[in-house]
Length: 274
Image 1 (cartoon, rainbow, N blue to C red):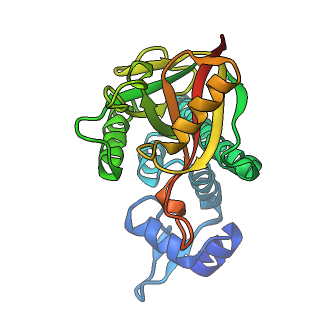
Image 2 (image 1 turned 180 degrees about the vertical axis):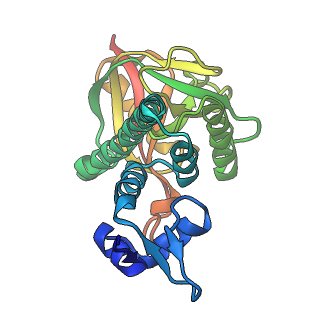
């Protein structure tokens, strides 16, 4: 006479809870071989391979309803098909995780820049940058803190339409041709950096490769004293402005404290020798 296992014994053999077996019974995934008049569930040793397979499939991430459908019509062909399909799903998830890791690394790199250069506030320097691509959205109204935030979100909306995340940084672009006018911010706008592998996207704008006169500063883009100081330094050191200004925001209002209520930014102005 075959010995049956109680629900507790079957659970212990497979290192799962009694509640799991009760649930599997209720959803008709794995049922006891018999249930007595008192409602006690009993399982046969011959059921162990099936439960073991169910738990394996569950452990690799296959959903219970998919497992149930598979178990009801299981053969070698369907078993291979199930695993191949799930393998493709896992590969897609791996690519998504790699992309997420890249976004995290970009943000960490941005924060590392702040840590490395906080001691060089307001000191002009020359840096070399590669070509960079951004989404650019012009300001619709006079520049202000509110207008900055709203315009960045318009650029963010474009990113969302292309399933891109804004992990590369953002800032303000000030047009070269407006620097000597009364309205410095004519044609200016907000931008969000794009990954290097983005080929084409609406509102895309290119920051050219080359030398840039730079200055780290606490200040909003509309506080132009730092821009004026950097342009004066450019002229004093026999350079000339060669393109549009990029005011890159490194730490925004989410990092404000009692002693600081302005963004931490880096002014970047493309230059060439006179």
